[in-house]
Length: 199
Length: 156
Image: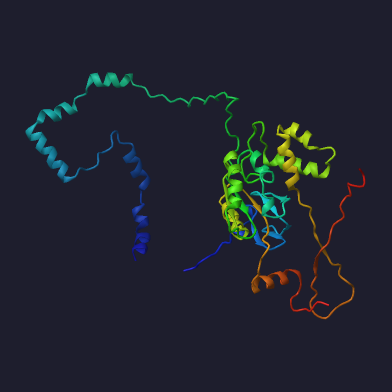
């Protein structure tokens, strides 16, 4: 109902609105908004008791005016951030992704004291010796990795790399059987190079 | 309430673990079967050239004395349970000399100790000898049969 009424009243409300608007805009000083009754009463009280305060407020403060004229607000672009030179001895991280797992499950040191060896290198020389025992003798390994020769001999004697055997999948025959076909798994030795005959 | 179970051995990114053992060797969680005694590291395995507990000497454990960084703990699986302390007495001076932490256990307990410690991300090693006496349960026999053949078929 309200909407219909407002729609019906619109032409009357909008009558001559442009000239009325111009009239308001062209006024020298806009009319101040009406004050609350409480404020009016307070103002009245001050006027009655301390009229000098009102008088002082209405006066123009020349000193303040002069100072305000000296105040300027300027804005500048922020100063560009200067790049800090990097210390090559203490480089900052370049990647922020979480560090992955270690290859052997633990952190491997970059430097190894003499007489010791990392697991990676130990596996390497055990493997090398097993594949080519004539070339990779315990003396050579001991020299290369800075290990006591006796220890290398014992390591090579007691620690070996595994030989791998893979199950051979049975070939499918052309004959069709009744029932589900189940390929059997069977461990078969793969062909290994016979190094002993070459020597 | 909903309960969930996560099995350590099924989480492959935790490293190598032992799924089962028998008189001939060990089955790892990456579907490899290892025959004979084994030296296990968090992510690698080596064959250990020893026959029985009598072969476990300073020489056969010499690999662990030179590793850098030093391993946190060595789990030694002795196969069957050892009754007397003569082995402990024999190995003790060696441990003291090289400051190696050692846990001497029967192989069945050593396997689970290694699995747990490995899942915690420790730098450990296990040197295990398969037990000489091992009585599988019916369930284990069934599992083994199922792995190799259709159990409802009769072999020729």
